[in-house]
Length: 250
Image (cartoon, rainbow, N blue to C red; front, side):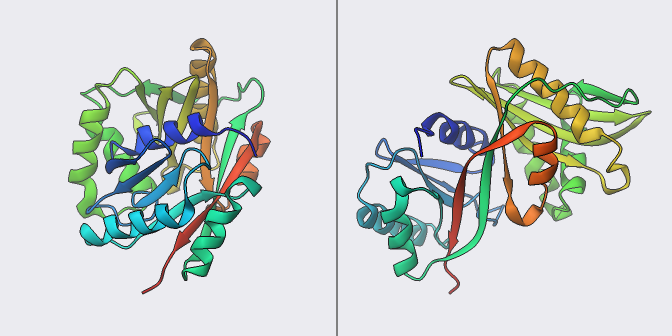
């Protein structure tokens, strides 16, 4: 329990580069994309538990129906959101996964000296995009869309795109988005052939120093199905809260 509004605003702010963002009053939002089909890019979220669950769910369902996409929701798993979670369950939605929102509790300075961290500018934006698509096993046909998104994000002062390089080989990415006292680390990924050598740890160590210099808290999110929460805990991240990922199989 607790006020996680700024956590949610950080998430919505970053993913709004990847998907369209619509606000539902002052307490909810909808992300939707015709290019990226996962719930991460197509879901409704809630900033505060004050809304009417049935009215909110109906509004979201009507919206997604209007844009020709299935409705999905990410809702905090807590007493404050019990009624909304129950409403979704009663309407036939199923929990497809859970998303853990984590925050770094202390300093992090564990680096592999062979890994150089570059801040991607416009000249490196396409390289960042290519590593992202490969690291996350995205459909190669989405590369053009990712390049377009990254070219927009790289010019925003709230965004910093990190590229991990070993020798002359770019092999890891992370995106940082800062808003309202929090720096979110997103898209933390490493190419398959370069995993378990400290690329992600080095990138997150950079992120920790960057967040500290801005006097912000470093946060990140991870799906349970990805099975990397233990890795983040070893680096000093603690789980702040979890969200249920609700989908309906038609």
